[in-house]
Image (cartoon, rainbow, N blue to C red; front, side, top):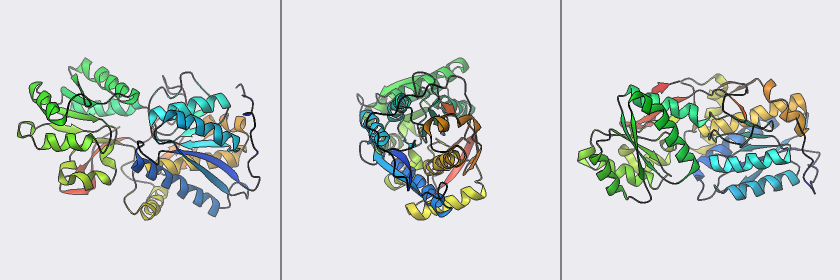
Length: 370
């Protein structure tokens, strides 16, 4: 592995602490609720590490930077964190932002464990410096396509916004459905208002509408319009990207937010560690923790194990990805080279298709598993 030189002007980390840089969307237009859950998991894990003696007696410190869903801001944050002497990077939720951060981390030679972003092409070329906990989009969205097929949906519409992430998801769905007789109709959610989307759904006899759009808007308005249109009483609304996972969804939509299947990266039963962490996250968040919060916790758990076993030298950490074997909140975490994926990948985290029970919106129903 070629080791890039240290960034010019780099400052040594305070020798009393071991610093990890955390990239998190905490302000709009970032998905703030996801960022809050991710940060809660990261911070809880750091607290647990320090309660257990830190890293060789040195406290672990989280240096947090808000990416606000802005790739350029994320790349600048990576530069700043490198100058501050962080030993590794953690976090990020938005795929296009994580891609910018990963590219910069690769250039600087700074290990980056991506918590939540799923875009397959996280880096343009294979890299030794980046690893990922979340499953690649192609893995999860093919599972979702299988769920659609098993449920009898062959005429699928997607309401989508311009984004590399949504475009990639549409390609995955179309590529998996087409050989099995399925079709995917794209509806531009910026050019069509919710009423016009309903008209197109009726005209094309779609049996499922997938929300490949931001939350709360336009996702909430689309759900309300479709649920309120009697002609679409039999249509399934889906959200593979996980918009209904967070507590704001049932608050905004009530019963209309139920029965909307989405991808969730949790096992059907948590391990004892997962149960303990879940209870602590619930107390910290004052609501049920999402899978994103567990991803945050597992990120720090992996980096802590690597720091304790291999020290804080960046090249040594980057070389340790294939030797990781950490019991996380959702199972044993190991990294490998998955086909078509340019980073070290946990292949694969537990993956489910779930929805919220319309009768009890706080309860999730497991519909399909990997």
